[in-house]
Image (cartoon, rainbow, N blue to C red; front, side, top):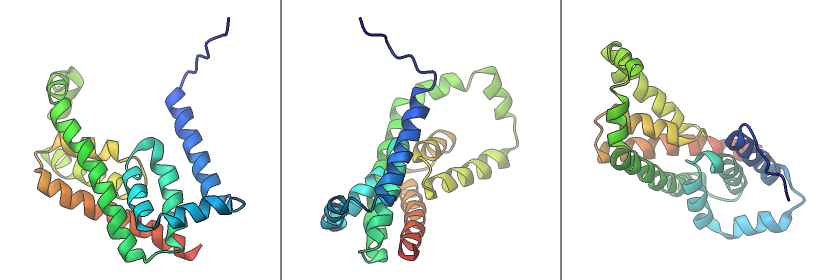
Length: 183
């Protein structure tokens, strides 16, 4: 019988592999058919890369794809399109956190460590966490963390969240496109 592979950190290993894949996607210039396929997708490919930009396991490859597409597309239009894709993914996460995790978040708020946290200065909860969440959303870091912070720690409307998410993702994607134009 076969042995079962027991990894201590399987998700971190998978995440590492996705970043290695991202490196090969971008640096692997010996795959001209793959590059041609990505470029052939046009702005639809940019939209798909935007959808993938927000998730842990696809953020690295998505960034590599955006870097490739930046060489061929208008960066302003591409930023608009990819930002919209990222917004759709973030809205999915936001709605999931708000609807599915509300009960668990309320239970967790009764935990001793979080009761201590609730005594922390209001400015920390009001300003620090939203700013931290914004930084995470704007960067190629996985948006699940930032969106969850906003969804769980603040009473933000979906409309305000959408404006914030789109703006921050678009800024991060625009920087990626600028880097892609330079390299």
